[in-house]
Amino acid sequence: MQFVDVTPRVWKRLLAVQQGLACTCCGRWSPGERAALDLYGPLARRDVGPVTVGQIGQSLDGRVATVSGDARDVSGPDGLAHLHRMRALVDAVVIGVRTALHDTPRLTVRLCAGRNPARVVIDPRGRLPDDAPVLADDGARRIVVQAVDRPRPAGVTALHLPLRDGQLDPAEILAALQAEGLNSVLIEGGGITIARFLEAGLMTRLQVAIAPLLIGGGPQGLTLATPSPLLADAIRPEMRVFSLGSDVVFDCGLTPEAVAATAPLHLGRDGVSRA
Image (cartoon, rainbow, N blue to C red):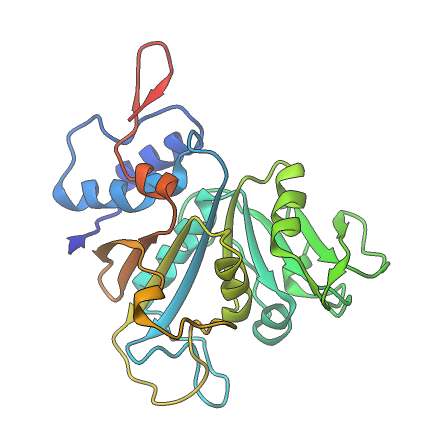
């Protein structure tokens, strides 16, 4: 297990990597800083093509909320800071409308330096009210993916896609976001939304952050609509483990490109990135 230490100078380096101005290998780093570069580097890089990463914060017994729906403190303080860092490093963060309605998230970056990502809500039937916190005008792009012809406030982009078997197709959602210039995407919630992108084979990485608490009941973090009947057929990703302090992150590479992205990035004198 690698112990992560996100110091100001290592975070400055990661933001420079995001802008294509720096590498993840050069420099003198402590073991904890090197672990931070290893954990966040694949998310910061823009030379590896489109990236779709899912993130789940859950308890030791795999719950994301209590039976009553209380999910506010499932992740510890370091797990929450980790989520904000992920937001700061991607182009867009995506949630389903049920998460937007139930949790009323803002999806902003408040616990680290960096810009707010574009906020995207998957809302097939136009249920999201226009005054939802996720649509607040704070300078970040706001996008609603919907199948209905429902007008949205000025400054909010409505992407219209057709329903497929009563749902919006994850591949068409990603294609529409990439057409908007959003190539690095964080699927933040809820579990059903993450599972749909995972089952469609569209997820590059999956991060599961586990906090040391036992809830005993409530919704599970990830349940697939078509689970594997045999362990031999189960998804077995390439995995790395990092300690954040209050939480432990399992970083899972789901594609060969994701595994390759964990190699250190070096910028040559010609500005070309090389692993």
